[in-house]
Amino acid sequence: MTSPKKKSAQGKVQRFDVLVVGGGLAGGTFSLALAGQGLKVATIDLENPAAWTDPGFDGRASAIALSSQRVLDAVGIWDVIEKEVAPIKEIRVADGHSPLFLHYDHTQLGTEPFGYMVENRSIRKALNVLVPKTKNLRYFAPARVAELERDDDGVRAVLDDGTQIEASLVVGCEGRGSPTREGAGIKLTKWSYEQTAIVCTVEHDRPHNFCAQEHFLASGPFAILPLPGTDAKPGCRSSIVWTERSDLAPVMMRLSDDDFLEELSLRFGDFMGDLKIIGKRFAYPLTLQFAQSYTAPRLALLADAAHGMHPIAGQGLNMGLRDVAVLAEVLIDAKAAGQDLGSDAVLARYEKWRRFDNTLMLAVTDALTHLFSNDIKPVKLARDLGMAAINQVPPVKKFFMQHAMGTVGELPRMMRGENL
Ligand SMILES: Cc1cc2nc3c(=O)[nH]c(=O)nc-3n(C[C@H](O)[C@H](O)[C@H](O)COP(=O)(O)OP(=O)(O)OC[C@H]3O[C@@H](n4cnc5c(N)ncnc54)[C@H](O)[C@@H]3O)c2cc1C
Image 1 (cartoon, helix red, strand yellow):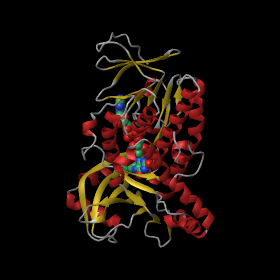
Image 2 (tube, helix red, strand yellow):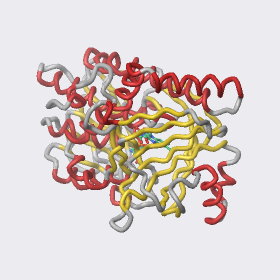
Image 3 (cartoon, rainbow, N blue to C red):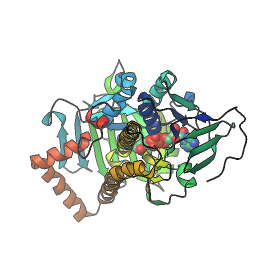
Image 4 (cartoon, rainbow, N blue to C red):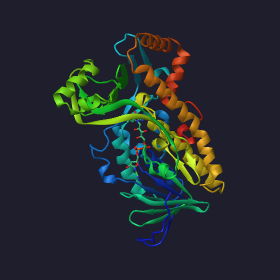
């Protein structure tokens, strides 16, 4: 931690309740949630938000569980993106080309879909629309925290342009490489899967029928995730997350468009007709990491800054939005009770509520990654039989389907569809 000795280049100190460092998917949603309830929030992001909607910024689309959709709805993001999402009505999980597969249909639980596919860019675009209209919220972007000090009295930060900020609490949500976490000396446990996720968007001849598919190949999972499509070809666009060995991924990334399409088609299959790649390819190296603590005096970590997992189950952002909903609820309740927002007692409530759930999800995704990223015959047989068994036992299947919707566990108010 460094101390802010520099005198203000931008006039007097600006006072807020909470300083949020990293205003992306999790940090931006969190900032809107707090400001909507009357807390004064300063949010700092390294990037110029104008660049966020560029198709080259982040090629990912995220599977958002129903409970996460409720959080986006509560903060106003859903209203902006509603026309750009695709519902997930079915989930099909297959082990390579095995005839045994898992199949979930949302009608077995009710009328609501399991969740929605949302392009990350859409959420960022919604932040650009909502932030300027939100009272109590001030975005500083592009900007960086140059100095940060925390003590019993509060948090003091100096931005790189000399702006001085004071708050009761700083929340680090800068993603996996969080400087707030590192500056606080919070240790990180981390390992690599030696896998890279190649992400791209494809257009296909036949519609996906809003079915999310995951095929477990020897190099790792290959996911075909439904996107809305175009007016001319509704339901004919999908997001691809192709997990490849890290030594092979750069080779795939360097292939010509035609050769890349050929490799992709080998894995995709021909069940949706001819394929066409839309836009750029992106590569994300895959690691597991978790912060050894989510809090420090007057500091909390949120989403990927606290935990990063393999995308095998599409849960990273869903877990991050759970953190958002829980920390927002804890802080709103603390404010109503007249408590210091940065006090140890308030932060302990957040850590206790989120740590176990996140650690469990990290363990599950880690186990699934190891179980499914290989072609060892007895392991393959055991997992195929396991999937067939889940398909055949209705209560077990229902439990897994509720998990996919994110409606299991101790849900915060926003995830139950209640007011914050
Ligand atoms: C291939 C892939 C597929 C995925 N699919 C899914 C899925 O289907 N479903 C799901 O739930 N999750 C999925 N995830 C996980 C999900 O993308 C992440 O969990 C999510 O993006 C984390 O959000 P975040 O806001 O914590 O971090 P980020 O999205 O990384 O945002 C961090 C923000 O902090 C800013 N920042 C960085 N450094 C600084 C700094 N020094 N100062 C100020 N600001 C800074 C950045 O500009 C950015 O705006 C996937 C991940 C991968 C890699």
